Length: 155
Figure (cartoon, rainbow, N blue to C red):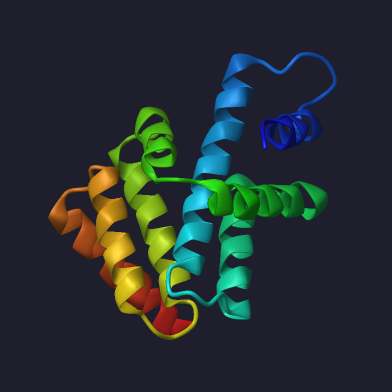
């Protein structure tokens, strides 16, 4: 697992040494990707629509393409299976992002939850838990849910 993470970091870095801020950026990318995968897997089924939503969101959020995107998705899925809790990932996001960015991530997570056209009880519970772990105020949490739901209906 650790080797895989380092391989991802190595593949994404430019020639030379990776600056500390670049490592932090990669850590935030992975933490975000793992949470997206956790939401995708929450209801016990991972639809093609959910997989596509995860890839689209990562491509847009972090401007990744091709092999970089595929490596991040594969590592996120592997890490998600091995993860014992969500706190490590949400802690990284709490350290690296401000309130607005965390709300944007929560909205992205909602988009994955809505991607298959249904919101299951496990997905809803996970989303509530993620909102709490990301310290998103209740009103903002509801706003992210409504925006993602209306964006899903427009698509």
